Length: 279
Image 1 (spheres, one colour):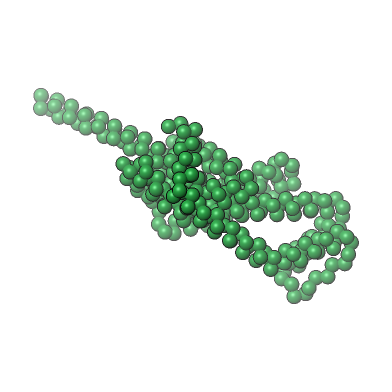
Image 2 (cartoon, helix red, strand yellow):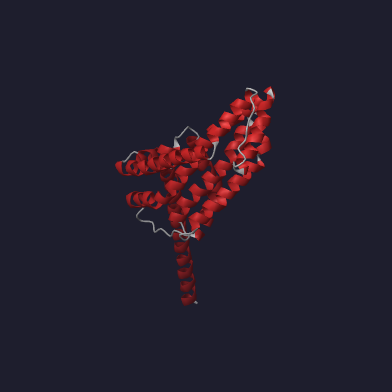
């Protein structure tokens, strides 16, 4: 089965009633969490910082509450400095709106991927029963493994975001700089969720060693889909279906290869036994 066939088969599976019902869960959960985070952020002073930015831009005096949290004070001084001059004011305005938009979009992607991780076994179980019941699944990892991967990947993503700060000011390159950390998180979490549900550690090492680049290209393709504003809210289930089919197919190929090798070994043993008897 070629890649186009896998993509089309995954689309067909996505639009089945069982998968569409599951797709509602990350949609509703992510929207609720984003809604809560919006009001939490407002409580932490984002509205006040916007008012300070406008006042600073208009040359008005900015008064800072002595009882305000330290991060609010630092952010206030930083915003006042940026908006004091016309050139830095233009850059600051552009960055605030751009970064704000990117943060909202990327937050929706991250939340959807985290939520869909809890639904991965259910989705793959449906695919397994429908197409791959002849395969025995040997998932690996413990209950804490997804949390460890989530924490490790999240910390690395934050580190990459900080490391690439200088590149954010370079046109065109800043798009890649924003996208790279999230793609790293996206690939690690999605790939682990699917592979750890289907494969044993040994099977994963064999398949990923040979097909690692193919799976990176697949997650890159899915990442481009996720960059469509809020697309991940609706399509997260499709990501699991698509990667699930890819891993099931590779597992099937691996098992067939192992079976052939065992048959060859049996034939060799039989031939050696016949030679011994003949001698």
